[in-house]
Length: 207
Image (cartoon, rainbow, N blue to C red; front, side, top):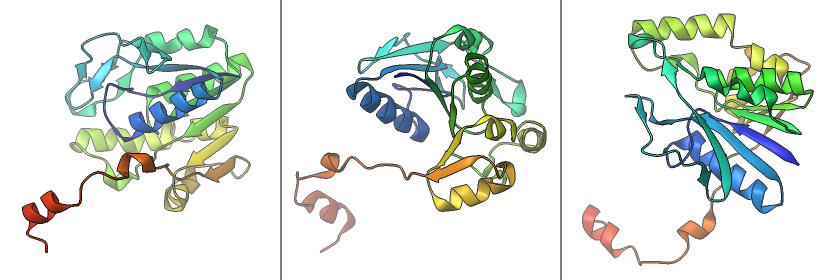
């Protein structure tokens, strides 16, 4: 299956959604799927800083990175006009990540143009958690009202990572849209063995 994963940033850029998409993309590839990641050229968003290289392949997965821009000042909204190249790509399914980002809208339109399913994992943050000044909060309120429901309406499936997250998003999701809760996974092998906890106990004076 030919799968496109779309996200605002991707490793070596660090972050929660970034780690999630990387784990998903590498494991889908390991299962024999043809996976391509569409993302920006950013290393960080606050402040906006680009990666130090193209990183066109990460752990065997092809990555297409597009120049990121932002609205000025405190408004800050990342957008990538050239990512519209996705409209002409091939895919059997398109999966977009993160609520409130430009790539999600591009992915939804690309899926509609290509006539393939659009899957949406919002990694949703409720309005009260919006960081930044008054301008950014006004932008969030505008986005929620004018654009926020569009990816949900376009989605064949909405994936929430927890039940509370799904409930937060309920006002945005049409009743006809399929939803499912799939919690984030944990790589248990990363926490196996090694050490007896002595260093931690000494540092925190725990006996």
